[in-house]
Length: 379
Image (cartoon, rainbow, N blue to C red):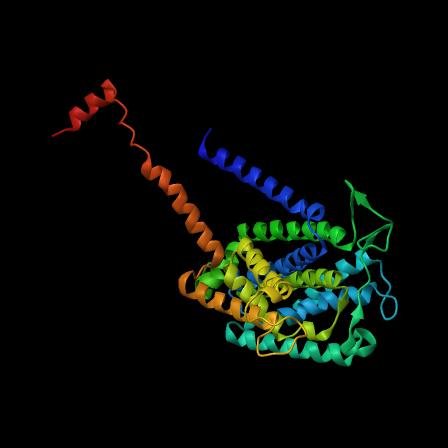
């Protein structure tokens, strides 16, 4: 068997093993850990979208939380009754993603003509504009108090505990267990579509834009169109992530979708590795899970105050921001390509060791005809 089929078999086996491992947690973990996983998978979807825009296309965006808010509030309002449009929840989820893509399309002419820090400042304005709208339009958004999120349902099956009781292999499936598999399916869809995009002609064009806009234009890449398309695609990923976050939180409030959330997503893709789908997912897990874990174990950690307590110690949220801020600095100094690049170098080093330690093969004996030809050409 040649190396290529062998690598393909190993890759397929690894994917199946990871898929089985990700399907197992609802049967063994409690609600807290499942909730951490739900938040991490939703954040990973949004981070993959931002990675396509910033890591692959080279477009800086500080307005990712604006499109997350559109997805979250769009689903909540479209699926809600009062206030709301009262659409079927599955249709509302799709419509919320399309609504975020539409908002990205409205802003795409700016994204197609502006780049770098100028685009970052322009998208930063979206965050403050979105927060003002969410607070002011109380009849639609609920104002500061926000809105309760309607549970997602497909026919008679609901993704919360209000529907018919569901028991699988002796384990009762509540809201977290049901949402786990929905989030896992949507994350898998995001993973494969993003990787397919990166390997396609469009992905190569976006990388060419990132490396050299002039060279890409000379090769025939329509610069403005591809930039705008990357922004719309990133907005749709963010809309899906926002809708999943709303389903996991069960309530949406304006203060969550602020500038800090956009900075969190930038930290995710920098820590994970710019331009890498797996790196964006790994960075999202790290940045999302760290404050939740520090909040849970605050009473066991030094210098960390438990939520609601007074004192000089810092809170878990602030401490987690300091930690992954330090992680960003370390990544930029010692691993500019992030966790994905670090893992890639480790794999390369592990593969080289057996090759270096193996005994060199003796050269194959030369045939008579080859020996005669060699002798004839020898001066």
